[in-house]
Image 1 (cartoon, each protein chain N blue to C red):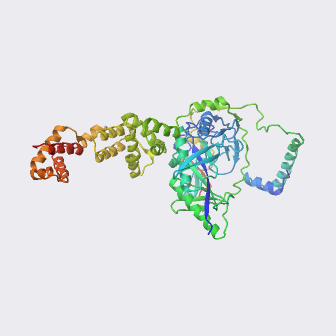
Image 2 (cartoon, chains in turn cyan, purple; image 1 turned 90 degrees about the horizontal axis):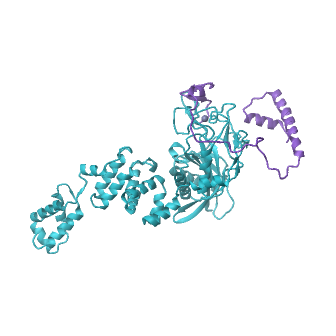
Image 3 (cartoon, rainbow over the protein chains, first blue to last red; image 1 turned 45 degrees about the horizontal axis):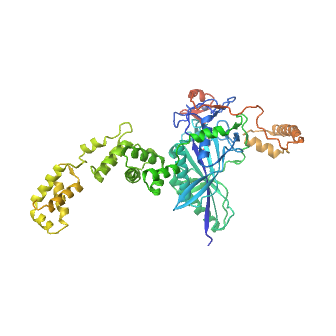
Length: 484
Length: 95
Ligand SMILES: [Zn+2]
């Protein structure tokens, strides 16, 4: 039987982290009561004139520079015409002929293999309104608060060959956009959305098959499943001697399958033309250099710095930078406790495990770096044992961001601090040795396994929690001494 | 470009216009005359001339990313034929 491979390209839409919309001064903040972030421009009133938000251009240039794109010097907007209730103007202002960025790439790392996924283009456009079906009236309710919120559409070349590569591309792109401060990339709020273009072809073939476009993908996990599912569907069609139809499909993550969407009639006939209400945009060298000078440190530079200045392995440095919220936490924690390796282990280990156990995404993390730094430090000094440190971490994660946990007070109050006080340890050791003279004698005669028993007995006699390492040290000293 | 009846129907549909027979004939006649008139331009030699999308010599009209108050929701909804819970109510469009 013929072996097939998938050919995948992505169209990623990100909502930009601006205060206002693309062409008007309405708030671009998420939420708000329906139709309260609207004005004549974004609700499509006749006679209103759009004016471009400078910050959107800055963020688009920053994204292009970070991804190694060419910035288009003479650019403009185009009008995409279609009738749908999510668009009160009956057209979307977008860029077809002269997108602001072209070329560039995203480097991914899957199974130890590096690969560049090329960027075809990036363009600026406005978001549409939110439609909700109203079951009571069997009609559609329209809220135009999102209408006119600035988006970048980042279009990749069809360079991905597996679900893992697709997810790696999205993760890398998201991290880059978050480091740039271009977008918060919250999929649950729709500020990062991905459409998947997928076709299949016999392995070794250069020709492209007929592709489908998949929408309604709400998480990276759903995207990975949708890619695998659509690949299976297309291969089965071809193996049955049937053809793949070029169409838009909607992924249903609960049913683990996609459905052809009722094709919008004349969907392809958008009758684009240059937007007459917006004059051309000319981007000169000085503007690009100004944006370049303001670019923050990006993942690759961080990875190099974490290895050079903090002694982390490349693997740890890569894992840490993959998600900005965790990377931020790591950097701040390391700065507080000056123990970068321990901080890295905590963030990648316990903190990530705790997030997973709580079913939280990293951007929902509210853990104060000062609290984590204290936990790291107390553990490294031996004042907190692993289980006590974990308990403190849970409490620190429960604390509200405005009132971070006082780790020392918490540990004291819950008896988590290990007694490092030698007086108490020595007393406990002495009592244990006196209570079990026979065992002490056998120990001294070389029965090594009884040492653990005596340590346990000493621990039981500690007022608070004993530090087992210290107790064991003292006990061994006492056993070596002639008269305990 | 030749304007046909099919083209008139298709453009009317895209613009959600419901034209009767007389209006369709009028549109066919008018569109043909408009395109013929503009066609005079193709007599000119435009080799090496940059396409121009705007007549005004304006570029880079930009504003700062500073919010200003939006309209009151009741004003936004004022012309809505029907509304519900602060939203416009439209014919069913979502599945
Ligand atoms: Zn507005």
